[in-house]
Image (cartoon, rainbow, N blue to C red):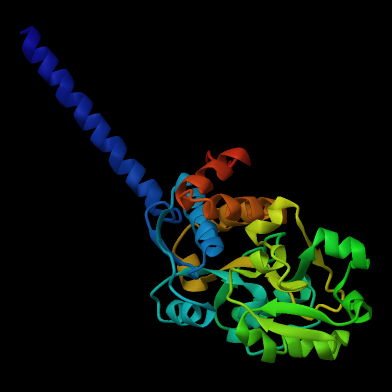
Length: 309
């Protein structure tokens, strides 16, 4: 009798739980299905972009989204094509690159806010949405050693004009680009620059060895964390602005919990200062996995638990 009573009680419990499950499913079906749907994100191939994709993936996962992250899809043009083809739902977008490569607009002279506004406007007309942008931007820059900057009283690019002849090292194609040596000569009058082609990635070695006086760098290069180099300011914004945002299809947003998705992405972006991304880049350059680096960063900025609604 006791066994029968226990069995009946167990059956009743299962029935109650099943009923609760059915009711829960009904309630959920009336809400945005963000937690149940997979969102596919793409990134460019270089390490920084992969880190950004991993940060978004992990933060969204913590908040109930299933994310398929495709690292190294390609440059901006390829990512835009993949987005339009429905192969991905969103991607890591560098605003200046999107504006110049995808929207075919000039970027020189535009500050971060104007660059972002134009990207947002362009993609809005294409049924795409642009998240808030990061505080950091990864633009081309001119770097020198701190000793060289101090000895020649250099704080901005134009100061090199009065330096006399100097050698500028950069990737070979930089010599003939407007967003390169051509622009430096036209905008800043650096006709005294002697160009020396060097492989991308070896520019800091060239500086350290005294082979060149200045190099083309990027503002989030991990080497900058050493404190040995100075970036010369670009007050005329020759190189434009390169903040990061997520570009995502409005069709996907209509089918997920878009408010929560954007809250999460915007929260991650807001914490990505220049110092933060330089440190993340340095850790990956030193051999750590981007998955591990991203996890630790989210924990350090209090994004390792779900955001309150």
